[in-house]
Image 1 (cartoon, rainbow, N blue to C red):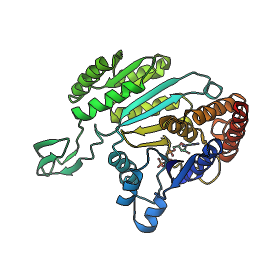
Image 2: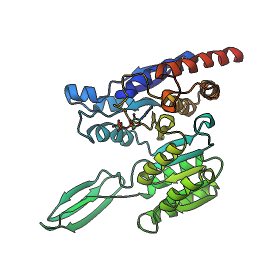
Image 3: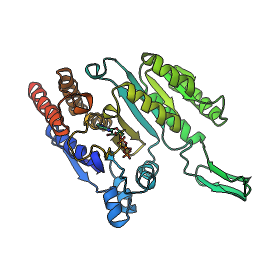
Length: 357
Ligand code: ATP
């Protein structure tokens, strides 16, 4: 048995994820899905985001399949920071893989760009606040050790978020990024011309590329944003700091068909979480009209990550075949509902499976 933890979450996550799990099971019965009710609804009912016991349990799975978290009844930030960012930090998932690979039938283009995003640091340090007097910053843990004093005044309040990078984290991040970037053109982006800490980013990007014997190009994030739109075929892998990676991967997913086609994986040395890039989409939830492709693609990435290459390739082939045959989700102007589309993948996978046997 291969155990996979499943967190459907909220909105369309709850609609799509269990159906995709049924689809995976229909292709490979060695998969065992263990469901966790970590959701905004549970938070509304009893104030729990995620418990320490759940985090400990989740650390026991190589892979977690995640839907989406978000509900307008919960103040923005609570579930994002209390669940998503917390899980990424607690499970030490230091690299985020975001492929944007288009289906020609849907977009008419052949985009194939994967953004590899640093997932722990940069401006997502979690250290932020506001003050008017003098503030002493002290941070001391396994990774950092420093003191800084900054002063504000009554008519000049200071708002701050610390951006930070550490050598240890960047070394492991670039090492992993170059393992993943196994073909095509590798572009490393930053704003080293304007933000000093990215000099460390560049230094370690260069050092690890020599160790991995990978040829890389550097491009500033603003120039990259311009050129991706102008000439997307010039890019294969883009390695980006946390904040720019978030923005650039939304651009690439838009070029490759939109949120309904954008999968992702958060990877660490022990655990991983695979999830669609889109959120809970409350505006369309509960109507069986959400596009399930992003979640199906995330599940394929997950199977490959746990070395279940055979079922992964059957589902991948089925997905490509049915889209080529004109089976198009509602989001892209076709008639196929969430469940209708997934049923078609299952049908095609069964056919392919029988051919293999
Ligand atoms: P959240 O707060 O959970 O991030 P959101 O609505 O702010 O939710 P998304 O869920 O990413 O953000 O949705 C942005 C827009 O894209 C919405 O209009 C939504 O309906 C649409 N959308 C997102 N995912 C899909 C999908 N799988 N199929 C069709 N439309 C989608």
